Length: 245
Image (cartoon, rainbow, N blue to C red; front, side):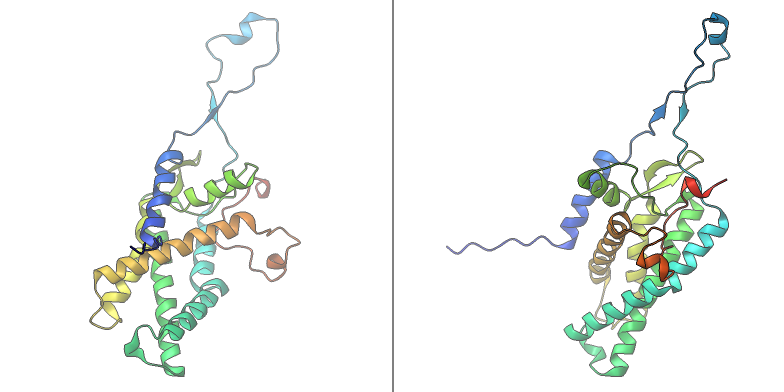
């Protein structure tokens, strides 16, 4: 009997990523003990000793930074390039077939992909604001490929909250990709498309977001990088502590 080769789909990949999140991400923020002055006088360690404090390397972005990142993520070169590639891919696959071929068909597919990306980004930022979350990406302070890989994947489903930036499961990050594709399915896609297609497309959108996090984590984007010279170095990345006074 011929065995059928098993190929994992996007839903299984998303499930795997969520298992990683539930296993490693939603943990209490790690506290760091505050140093005490080295003194022989026992009165220096009385009840007034400050309690342990959280790691303060996190810097919460200002409203101006969030607005700048939103505009860049919605109308900047990355979503335009992404929509162009998605439009070309769907044109090659003739998907949806009702849109046919030709320049007009490609324009329709490009506009569809750009619209989905815009709705996805707007939903992510709007929900993050409503839930007081910070969904910008912060590069890992750890070292090693696998810890950084795990950090990038975990960041796909989590966000920062509070002044200490503790990590929480993000409803905004999970819902946003499906908001964009569901809107497309029930607004401008052919009538035969339904919720199942919206979920399938949303899975790919979520995979694309995870890939973006991996790129932000591993691709060098310092002040002397090619991305910086091209002024493309501000995509959904949070402020660094070094940039603060």
